Structures are given as structure tokens and as C-alpha cells.
Length: 217
Image (tube, rainbow, N blue to C red; front, side, top):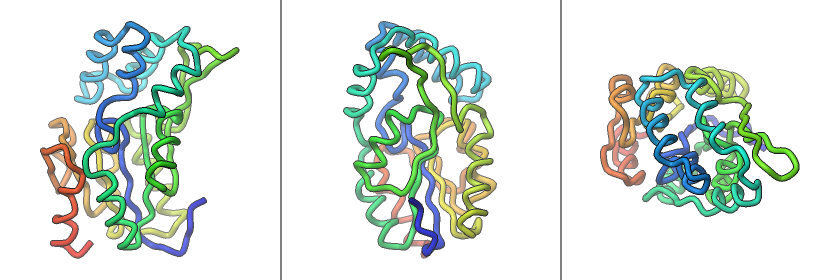
């Protein structure tokens, strides 16, 4: 449960940000559809495809995968370098830390527990009788979902733009930038770099810390 006593908020994208890779690619490799899914993912994150349609298309290729196998894959996803360090720094400085992901709760809930974060908001892979159906639904299905959720969360917690940090890598993270005084494009696509005010091009989340120290964030 979110603790409302603290008045700073940090929002992290999950895939290729807190986690080193794309959850859908790890799942697709098991399903024998990696190449097809990876192409769609790359174009979606670059802003070349409608995010909603691309998400549905990719998830449809997972139809028939045992839920247990998907859970095992999501539990074993690799952390991004520097994840523990940036989380520790932000917690010491009074931040609540949440995950916003166009990916899946099977993965984000595991990472939330591993990093002891405050909440995760993502999508749900539908399954029936222990098998993925190839359908998906949830809170992060659209290109503007993260911005809308961030605005709602700020209102709920009485947190201002000036006390909000967002970190992401793709086109569906752009919508968060308008609600945060510090927006980090982390090894990001050009679509996000154009809107962010902090750019980190090396795969180490700890490299964000010097920017925050410099601005006393």
C-alpha cells in the first residue's frame, strides 16, 4: 500500500529500463515467435505503430503457452545495471517508487517485490485452464496511459510536478514528461529524447544519480 506521508514520486518504466530487455521478447522466444515480436516491439517503442494494436498483435503470438512457464520466465528476468543503487538513493531521499509498464503484471509484480517498490501498474495476460489465451487487458494499453495514470496518482498523493521524476525509454513514456520536472530518457528512442530533460545513454541506472544530486532532487 502506498504511504501518503512522503511527498516525492519516482516512476519507472519496466522493459529496457528497470529490467534489461523486453518481457514480451523473453516470452516470445519460448513461444517460437521472437523475430516477429521483436520487430513489432521495436517499431512500437519508436512510435511507428499504434501501441494498443501492436500490444494485441504481440500477445496473440503467445497463445497456448502454459501459464506456469510464463511465470517462470517473468520471475527470472534480469535487472538493469544500477537498479538497486538508484532505488536505494531515491528511498533515502523520500521518494515513493512505482512501476508503470505497457508490459505485464506477471513481471512487474515480481520486480516490485525484489526491489521493495511501492506499487506497479501494468497489463494482465489473460489465461484459462492454465494456458495463455493470447489476449491482454489492463491499465497500460494505450500510448497515453502512463501520463493519465501519473496525473491520477499525483492527485491521490498530493504530489506536484516539481517533486516527480520519470524514467523510460520508449514512445509510450513521452506522455509522462509533461507531469514531471525531471524526465529521464534512458538508452531511449529518439521519440522520447526529444521530450526528456535528462539523457543517459549507458545501461546503468546509477548514472542518473549525479543529475539528481546536481539539482538537489
